[in-house]
Image (cartoon, rainbow, N blue to C red; front, side, top):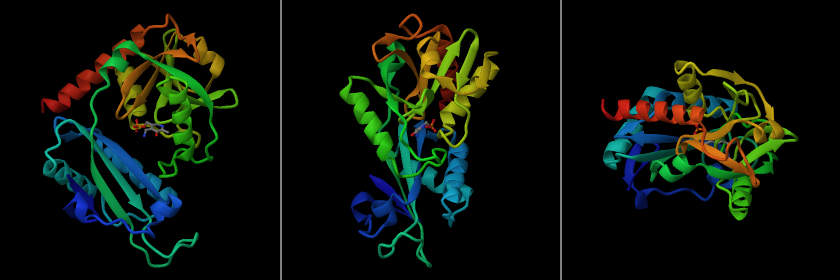
Length: 281
Ligand code: PMP
């Protein structure tokens, strides 16, 4: 496997992560996961723009332009002959003796490498079970930061309860999944939490909102409660690696008819068509 390490493409064993890397000690950095279909980085620019916004939000200056980063990632995909998969990319504030405040002269450390990913067809076809978990994260969930402990704990709780994903909620308000965004369908309207500081504005979330508009489905970005989710006609998760996955049950209660609904199906079809258009370029 070839890894992009700052400006170099190297075999994995030649990449050396320092003991005093601030990502390792403080989670002081930001990241992205970008899907690759047919050797193409899908929605690359929105991912890189979000990386830049996340970096700015933690006052980390990226020493690479976005076109430079795009070019390097394309080289990484080519070097690994990656056709269908994903790329993980993280930027740490850098290496310095351990102290909380920002060190004066410090160089960010970038690492990017391929991740295996394939369409989770069974989950997409049949839908999945989910479980509610209290959202105990900080108030800047819009930053895609390396600090993922609450997300890790929420996902682990879901796995232990036999569910595929945790639906996070602050009090009665549903925010998002542990690694996904949550949508509900109420009548003819598609609804999801607004992109504010309480959620990560998923690239797939935004893409699905655009697809819905093209399909003539009304959308509203407004919070909803746990009860509204439980009484919705349909619900689904979105994420880069999961795409659109129907939620058919939450904590033992069926959503709608307990099977994936027609609006979810239409959006999945529109999503597959968009991916196909990219791979046939
Ligand atoms: N919310 C959280 C907390 C996530 O970790 C993710 C996945 N990275 C998402 C939403 C979905 O974002 P995207 O569609 O950009 O993968």
